[in-house]
Length: 270
Ligand SMILES: NC(=O)c1ccc[n+]([C@@H]2O[C@H](COP(=O)([O-])OP(=O)(O)OC[C@H]3O[C@@H](n4cnc5c(N)ncnc54)[C@H](OP(=O)(O)O)[C@@H]3O)[C@@H](O)[C@H]2O)c1
Image (cartoon, rainbow, N blue to C red):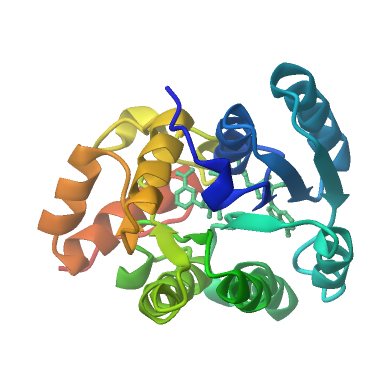
């Protein structure tokens, strides 16, 4: 399952952050299948090199791999240095990790690292590449948020707050950049089968619905982006669940899953 992207509109190069695993890796695969060259970013450089070489061999594309921690202030400078001579037509700002646990037990330093990766890095990437794409009057930006983030999430309160920022930023930019011929779509992933699901302590058998595949997540997002939709929650049933579930119930349902999966004692108050 793949969605063909027009490389004249969204190429010849694309930048994908968080490309070493999961959703970002699948974006890289699907874009390469459309003949789009790739700049791949994540901390695990060896995984990016392996992926880049595989896609080069399979689809004849070129790639650049950047091993960078987006929580680090200097990461963007390295990305700009590598991308400066390249004609970037699509940006997928996707990198992010989950760190479940009680807010008050966490170190402030770690909470701020999450803000750097999942707020500041997205802001800087959207600002820099938004300007470049607006000058060229083409291309697009896909920003990756999370389903339910804007409702608040117990035991991932800071993580969810950062993803709510991404969603709001992207929806605003969707309207602003449209005037410049640039598409902006927010991907709001429903539970998707990547290593993050296990890291969050979610037990698939206790979840209300099975996680969707990364292929489905990325195909639906690329289709939505081509149609210039402001946002997409992949998976029809998850879209329905999101629309029909009251905020308070969603907080309790996902908070309970996180508490159970991470050994946190939590009795839901009525
Ligand atoms: N899967 C889901 O159910 C789900 C649901 C809601 C939202 N999301 C969001 O979707 C995005 C992708 O997640 P995924 O599910 O594909 O998880 P994943 O398989 O764990 O991939 C996360 C990617 O982000 C990179 N990354 C994490 N922290 C980074 C940092 N500080 N600097 C640079 N790269 C970093 C990781 O690479 P390295 O470890 O090599 O750095 C990896 O490539 C995340 O932002 C996540 O919050 C996922």
